[in-house]
Amino acid sequence: MVAVLSGEALERFLQEIWGRRADPVARTVIRPLGWERLRALAMAEEVESRLVLESIGDYPWQSLSGPFSAEMLDSLPPAGWTLLLHSMERHEARCAELLTHFPFVPRWCFDDVMVSYAPPGGSVGPHIDRYHAFLVQAAGRREWIIEDVFRSAGGALLLEGCDLEILAGIRPDRLLEVDPGTVLYVPPGIAHHGLALDTVETWSVGIAVPELGEIAEDFIDHVLSEVREREEDPTRAVVSASSGALPAPAKLSPVHQEAFALCLGEVFTSDRIHRWSRRRLGEWLSESPRAASSEGRFHSANEAAGLERLDPAVRCLYSDEPDGSVMVYAEGDSWAIHGRGVPLARALCNLRPVSSSEIHAAGDPGLESLTSHLRGRGWLLGATENTGKTSR
Ligand SMILES: [Fe+2]
Image (cartoon, rainbow, N blue to C red; front, side, top):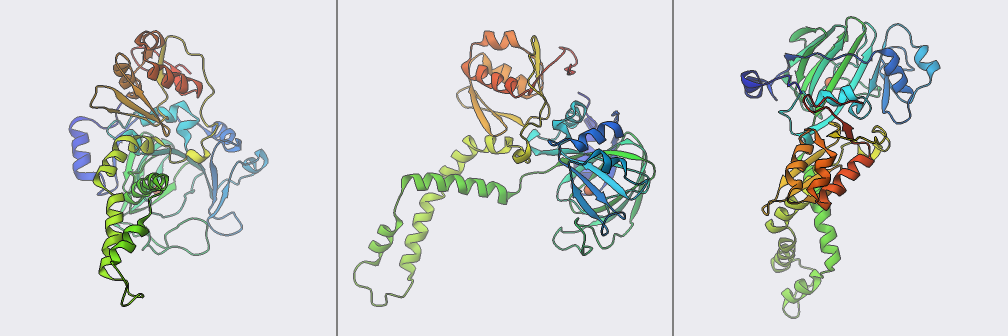
C-alpha cells in the first residue's frame, strides 16, 4: 500500500488545497489498462460504459450508453470521442488497488474509479463536478484548463441541446499539462476541461462525502417504518386538545398546531437520532453508491486457502462497540463480532491479510458468517503476508 500523500505533504494538502483549488498534488505509478482491455470491458454487459461523441455524433456532445458492439468500437474515427468506464474498481484489481493509495480518505467516501480513454484532441468538455476527484494520468499527456473560481452546479450556464452538463464557457485562469503519473486534484465546483494531447488514459478517483439531505432521507425512512409499525394515532391527542365544543371549527388554532408539534417531537427525538447513528449509519454508509447496478460486478468466488485479504473495492467498515465487540458493515449488511474475532475483523476491514486458520480458531460465529459471506461473493482475495499484494 503506497500513499500518494503522507506526512507534511499530506498536511499541507489538507490545509491548503483540499476543497479550495485544483492542483497537481502528487505523483504515482500505475500501469495503464490499454485499448484492448478497455475495448473488451466496454463490450461487457456488467460494466457501466459511455461514449461521449464530441463532434462525430448526431449532435454535439452526444452521450451513448454501453455495452457497445465490436463493430461500433472498431469503427470509431481517429478523433472526436471519449470512452468512459465507471466503477472500474469492481472489475480491475489494479483500479481497486488505486483506492489504497488514498488512505487519508475514509473508505465510505469513495464513489468509484472511472477510467477515461480518448484519442488526441478528445475531451468531455468544460464541466464542474459535485464531488472531489483525484485524476491520475495513466497514459499520454493531457492539458487541463482550470477556472480558479467556484461555481454552484445549479447556477452554471450550460450548453443547450447536449446530453452532458457542458459549461457554455470556461475562463482559462490556469493551463496545466500533466504527464503519466501525475495526480491532479480537482474540488467540487471548480470548472475544468481536459484536452488529450496524445492518446490518453486517465483514472479518476471520485470522492463524495454524503450530503445531509441523503442522510436525513434514510433517517426519516427508518423512523417512518418504526412509527408505522407502532400504529400510533395522533388524532386522539389533537381532538382532546380541543377541549369541548369549538366556537370556530374551521380554525387551525395554536392549540392544534402545538398538539401536532408535540406528536412530531415524540417521533424525531435525539434518542432516535443516536440509535440510528449507532445501528443504521454504518450499514447505510457501506452501501455502494452504485449498488443497484452492482450485481455480478465483482470477481467470481475463489477458494482461497491460507492468507486472505479484503478486496479494496468492497465498502467494508466497522465500529467499536461499548461492550468490546465490533460491528462490521459491508455493502448494506452488518455483523456483530465478539471475543477473539474482534482483532481479526478489524484487520480484515483495514485490508490486512488474515489467515483462514486464524479465523477458524477464533471460534466466533459472527466472524465465520462475515467471512463466508465475503468469500462467497468473491470479496476475499488470496494474499501474501508481507506486501498484502493480491494474487489474482
Ligand atoms: Fe471532471
